[in-house]
Length: 156
Image 1 (cartoon, rainbow, N blue to C red):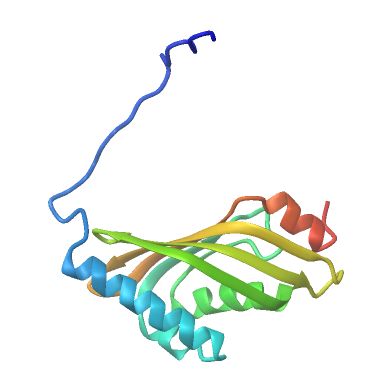
Image 2: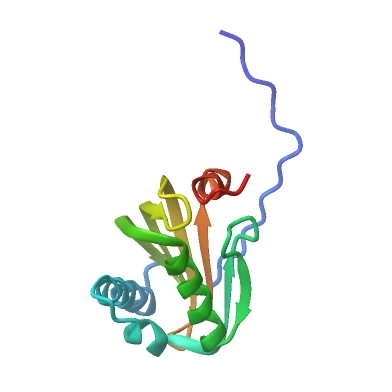
C-alpha cells in the first residue's frame, strides 16, 4: 500500500473565541431551532419571524431556482417562501442539531417534489445559523447537490 503524498498546500486558521463551545447561549439556540422547525411543520412561520434580527442576512445558493442574498426580515421571509413556492410535499428529516458558540447547524435529509416538473429531489443539506443577542443574524441553507435540485426543477 502506497503512502499518500504529504499535504503541502493546506492551511487551517483557527479563530475559536472564548465563547466557543456548548455555552448556555448555544444550548438556547439549539432549543430555539427545535421550536422553530416544529412550528414551521405546522404551517406557522411566526416563531421563525420572531427570532430573526432586523438586519439578518439570508443566503440561498445562487444556482438554485430560488437563490437569493437577502437582508432584513421581510426579504428573508420572501426568500424562504421562494423555496416553499418551488417545492411541494417537503419532508425534512433533521438528523442532528449541532451548536457551539454563536453557530447552530441543522444536518438533515431533504426530500421534495418540484412544483414545475413533478420530479422528486432527495439530498442531504445543512442549514447554518449565526446568532447574536438571541436573534438569527445570518442563515445559510447548504444543499450538497444544487445541480440535482435544478434538474428536478427542470433547469439544466
